[in-house]
Image (cartoon, rainbow, N blue to C red; front, top):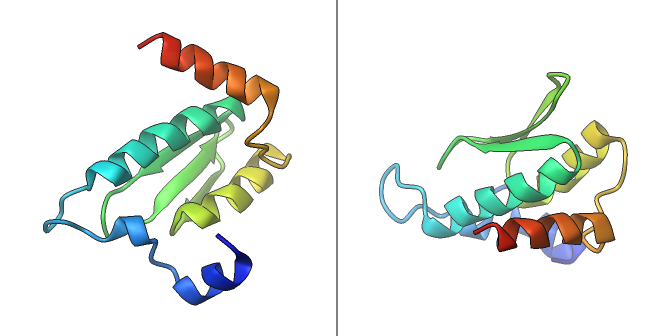
Length: 103
């Protein structure tokens, strides 16, 4: 998503629209699983509190940042991990590939 679209979109992410009262959409649940796998590479954890609540990104030292949407995850990762998350990092791609082979 470009910066302009992000600014215009507001805090609600388009995939967070609830299907039923209190239900977590399959897309949101899948996104949480993927983010958990990606963030583990950086020594971080992702937890989704469900519709209407913020998610969190935490490190192993107990630092936690609340994030309102997916776009806010990456700056939190950078602050907590102390490095820029790179989706093309060969180590990350290898770790994700190993996870998919374990299925």
